[in-house]
Image (tube, rainbow, N blue to C red; front, side, top):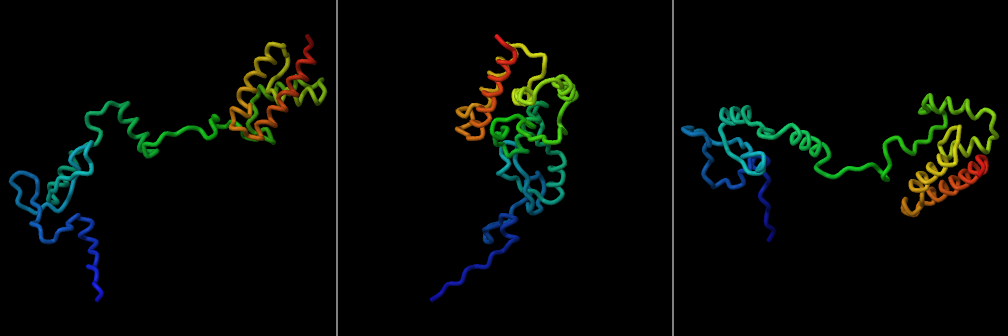
Length: 188
């Protein structure tokens, strides 16, 4: 013998009636005898529990209800920011800052200072110019400036700091070669 399922009533689901045998709700407003067909949240902290109103009183309640009442501007901004990202933490991908790691073959993102640095490297050989580009330096160079930049780049591109990434290892090799070349060009 097969049993038939009760058909699903969508109106019943939306109004959370569920129990057709129960007595109808009465509007929660004082001195109102109309049926409470429309729900409204009890408070900001308890938005999953409802107060039931008739149509006129739910309109009045909703027009006067303010989710952000009693919050400071900072609390409101933090709540709005958290809501934007579903209250989940956010961070840059791979720990990099925005714009870092973009390959710029056509020089769209070069600043005027980088363009001026190109004029300073006019008399140098191509290997030295490449080493300067890898180290992101511009002349005039000092041994201290090269060492300082080298330490920054090693911390940033070391494979251990990048989860054993093979590309980071290759970048570090290029940085080491550029450092050696620039230190030879500066001298002792």
